[in-house]
Length: 427
Image (cartoon, rainbow, N blue to C red; front, side, top):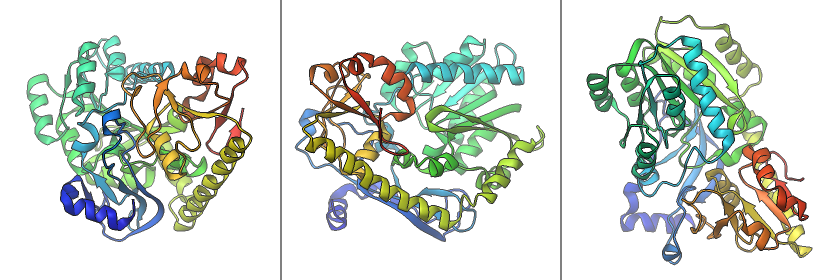
């Protein structure tokens, strides 16, 4: 969809579906520079039904900018969260065994390191189906989830995790503190970067967090995104791309302190940020070391960011050339797994039904639907075998080892996998 068509659609009643951001989400500064434009794309988690195939599909600008004051990296447009999360949200954090083990270890390590007593309260913002809180519950803590996706919150409740189906804010924080007491641990795993008003989030956290408690953020690290070319992790849910330097200033301004950071392997390279009420815990040297490393590597410099953008464009050409060459040889190709990141990859690289036969998935929330932006059908993993597929483009490359192990029969039959990031390779 071109810009004129997009504006016309919005004039016909969709202008409230997104708002343009001209200010930095952290410092409020209004001098920003765009360095990466991925075009107008459909929402990466909006998997459509057969009945919706012939309806117009709304697209939104996907552009990444840098704040020239605090150097925070973010999208310049925000889709309304009600659209993203409260209309048939399809993501479950329990899909992979790797993910389940990660969250269980996450909870266990926090309880052991900080010595939280049994019966103390753990709250997860954006708790999804409750996998992380299940880990805290196994450690003897009281748990409460908060997630705006009503269908996902219901699954969490069935899993034994009490969950409030709502957006987190100061009012909700006050109500929870009154009804349940203050929390020793508040977590936001892969959700901090999804939130538009981070100041509102932090005011709520500050109100709800016990004076000795910790707020823990886990999210992909900008340094890995740049270094490993993980541009497929850019989509409308991911409003921000996090790094140490801008966040130190932000948390300080909110009356809190970033006192520790740990790097973890999940999702192609993430970090875990530990935040407390200002002065409660000493700031560890690891935080300052990572800040210094970002400065030495010129992580936020426009030259670095513009070079990254050129590498993204080069990658699109490489991946398209590989797939087109295989198709020219008469090979049949399918996508494997349908994460949101995969939709960014396919739609930015203009890969659709002319190249892939279909996409396979494990989660029943997506099977039987069609991929946003390209209308590729989502089928069960078994279709790899029955569909005579030669090559499988592995879209959830961050779980490649587990997925390839689960699909070992495909490889035994002669099938091969294509790992798209950081460079397209056949294995």
